[in-house]
Image 1 (cartoon, one colour):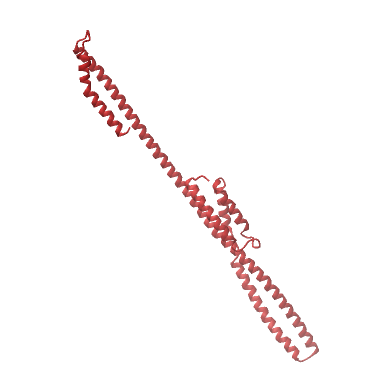
Image 2 (cartoon, one colour):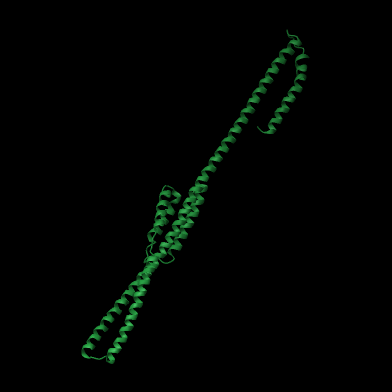
Length: 267
């Protein structure tokens, strides 16, 4: 009950208490109506009657005020409990989306490394093929030179000018053969160092599928994850900027999801 109403009720009671004796004097004790009861008896009766009535009214009013205040306190307590419940639920949602954000960040880091590793390996495989082809050509030329030298040795007992020329060419070819073998060995080591692996990305991918599969607002994230995962090793069908463009989209989707989920916004 408001303070204004309480003040009005108090003033009403004061007014009644002050005006009641005068009203009794004028309308009861100073009238010409005949009564078998004396003024004293009327005074006692009316005093008891009015006193009981006012007491009852006061009691009812007290009960009304108490009940109203009790309901107000109950509503405030219920509102406080509901607010506390909402805060706890929001904390739980915040904890959940923090885990999602961490999984997304870990996934993007690992899948990006895998994407670029695949590109490096593709280049190294191509270089290896070219080096092996060149080495095969050199080894073939070395075999031809050895055959020519054997023929010259059979025809001529001493080393002719042609023999020495072939010998020099053979030395150059052997030097080139050694250089190519070294490049192939170095290329193999580099391939081993850049060996593509997306074990961590696979783990996060499946974790995110489990966590988001029943959340409607997470459907776009799962769709984008699937697209990135499927094309991360597609060297021929994707551009070099593929991983940056698509992971940026995934990040933006995650930011929107976090805001909607934590604050329970309608989509």
